[in-house]
Image (cartoon, rainbow, N blue to C red; front, side, top):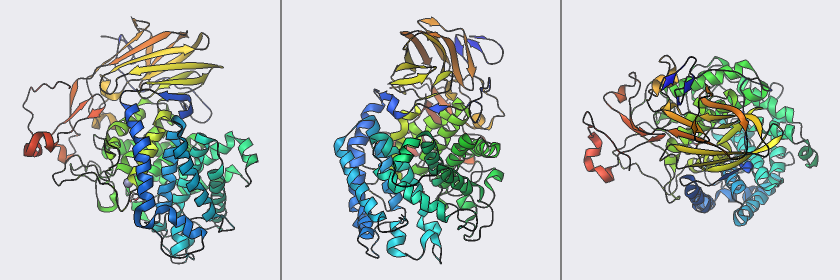
Length: 611
Ligand code: FUB
Ligand code: ZN
């Protein structure tokens, strides 16, 4: 291996983060996603799983929601019919149905399924009928059925429990994703009516001064703004007025009013990331899902408003989450009490680690990857996709986890359904969205963030560039990318070099220091020849050349079995190692190891071989 200065290596990669910056509309290095609609997945690892999730998991969850405690969909019918009382499930059941629709919509976008689409259309008709009861478009079935005089938690209500803004946000996301999958605006109309009413009611005085009780709507309203900015024709075609700037203003209010006194709402303290202004927060605290979704929103909004205070808060909180409060699996939220983050480095092996936490952390990392154009955030996303979140659903696709401790001796196992079935919809949101996370782009190049067998058609520099990726990842590290521009042209191809495959890291980098530097290496060839003219920029091997159709890039990521040690400040990690190969964290199961699994000792010098 021949090293030269500034992290540039010939033949074999050894990456140092940092590098050349480019300026885009809002933030230097900002990337744009390549959407699901432009990507087709054909992959030995992911395709069979995605088939199970679409054909088994989605119907299984909808069936269970329909039948649980009187039925989540019946709540809408009861509102439509003017009934009172009898709400089934918790107040966030509306939101979970909307999340199911969002996740399903992304699967539909990749693989059309008329029966599933018809089923969702039926649900949308019931949701719209419930909304039609209220002249202002207000919709939150729990409040309407149980406490109609306590909207938004006012008049002695409990907004922390009612989840109204969470539900509104989930509705907006569902509507956008369903429109993008089907071209139908039925749910978008419902969402816009409720978003408009929310903007009428909530914000700086004289409106009700209320922040979200459970973050989610921050990012959703940011996305609603972006969508209508990009689609004025849809705005004009809707039978309801749209002023998208109001959605952005309210999303920003929800971020900026936290940690400040509000006339209509008591502070939720650290549990709801409300003890300090967001721009002064230095640690991820409180309910892990809420915290990570809030940060997903802050990072999304930073990409829209270009503001340094948003950007710095997102970067800082991510560094704390990944450097001091995250497990090797990507799990977050160590303590059952409050489903919350513990103190820095408090990472017991039987920690709580809700599936929703892994998903939310994945969304946060993904947004920072786009904001910063840096591969480390895609590493973190991949950690969730392949470990923290993936554990949440059985191979058969119809049983689920809520908590995912590293070690369990108490028969912790998957359930068929749960009193709070929040995790399966969150799982489907992440896995549904995954095809849109594989590639990204900026004005001059394409980024390969995930190694997934796939084909993408990307609009770049005035032409269509097709990339075809072939790989058996994560079981082996060979990735082949065929580059097919419509006509020969110059652009950059950026390939993520995963952190576990980087030979050198800076010891004072929090994230790297806690995810121990690994010694795997990566190798790169173009058209069969070892590449010697690339740079490592923000964790990507960047190839700049004049590409012609049929050019082939081969990336080989070594995958030795690695012993991972926790940061020495993690008490529970002392004298322990985790085993990883490539991006996968391995688990010893009682089924294979009997009682010995509680105290397995790996003799010095043990060599592992993959099987
Ligand atoms: O509050 C709604 C969901 O219930 C949260 O996201 C989960 O953590 C669970 O508390
Ligand atoms: Zn959950």
